[in-house]
Image 1: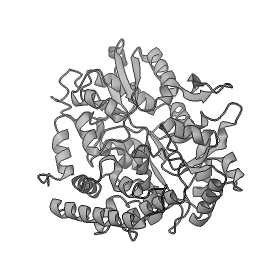
Image 2: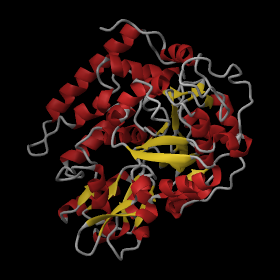
Image 3: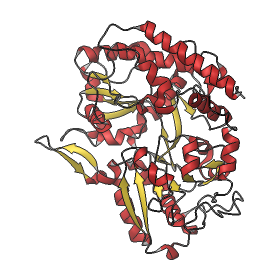
Amino acid sequence: MKTKKLSALALSIIMAAGTFTACSGSNDSGSDSNAGGNDNAGNGDAVQSTEAVDADSLKGKTITLYTHGGNRVLGEEKKDENGNTYRDESYAYLKHLAEKFEEEYGIHVDLQVNSTEDDIRPLLQTQDPSIDIYTSPNWTIEEWQTYAEPYCTLDEAKELYGDYAATMYNDGTYVYALMPAKTYDNAVVYNEETIKLAGYDSIPTTQAEFERLCENLREMGIDPIAMHRIENWPMATINDFANYVAGANDAYPGMLKSDTPFSENEPMGKTIRMYTDWKSRGFFESDIYTDFGVAMDSVGNGKAAMMLFGAWVVPQIQGRVPEGVDPNVIKFAPAPDFGNGQYVMAAAADSYAISKGSDDKEAARLFIEYISEDAQYLADSGYIAMKKGVEPIVPDLYKIIDDAVEAGTCKILFRYATDNNYMNNEEILTEAALREDYKYAGNLFDSIDVTKEPDWAAYDAQVEKQNAAYVEARDYLGYSWE
């Protein structure tokens, strides 16, 4: 066992104490980003708009932004009439925004695309000044604390973003990546024309009917659900679906409440079992998609019917439909009712963090604030602007879920705020060697080999193994539900 760690929350406060910069405020732009910081951190003097920044003093600077969202830099991948792949730059929304920003402020934004977090990890580890802003959706809280300049206090974020602030990447005290928009998280992104082939005009609202749809699609030779299982991160959707199974927003941190979190009597265990059962019945891809872009293509062209992901996927798939097909054939609907009602997770979206090694933190902050005030850019990206004083534009893709929420048939769950329970659960999973690469779900999901008769005894043995490892780690660390 590793040496027992301090409480993650207490440690995070210690780590952030010397580096905090007030929300949207100015900060020391010198090369020693760990020294000094803002002596008035958390005093309520946060800059609340781009107008409050001395932009003239920043003219002529160049900042570099690394993003995993390559479609918004390069444009969506499409196929021409000969089947050749090309990039449609009309979808390069971030590139267009950066050009507009440079025209207005005289600051150049160098956009770089990184495929994975590992592409930029060495730059962040060495606090390389060549990286100013980055977007990384799969960091742990500890990684945000290590690599990102605290953007603002959680209280300051709440002043501008309300309840959604608590769903930004934070340690209970500081927000590490500003998320200026709101969205509905993992639900059902689907191709309307494809499910019509199976006799359905919309995504069913019950689990039984949803599974019947999947069976019909499989019988037709269509992949019901594209997951891109060559990697483990798509398994993270299980966290939200476990909330839909439970009818509550705490399925993931709530693992702390149980001695058997991976068993069927608990939301997380029941959900992983459900996904694995779907796998055994052929509901996921019959051939592994080699790239997430290829997986999205499969929904756009109808080889697969749907994905279980957030709204952020919708514009990307809409940009991948074949020439001549209406992009609005790609729609977004709530997950079915798994026994406790129909729900959708709501959360802040589109994260932008400032690297601790940045030499131009103020210019970086100005661009992030510029993003937060451009409702059209956020809508084009599949999100809804939510900063105080910004008039939001709601993309059409939300209509089905909005209508269901308004009708009362679907309820909203806010993403669980990062607190001691959440962070302690992550530390337990780490201690048990289950958190990295989402092994807590992936190990169980992979215990079933679809090329053979399903071996549920092997699955159950893995459940017992993970339950034991979780309890041992929890007791060793001394954590319990608070």
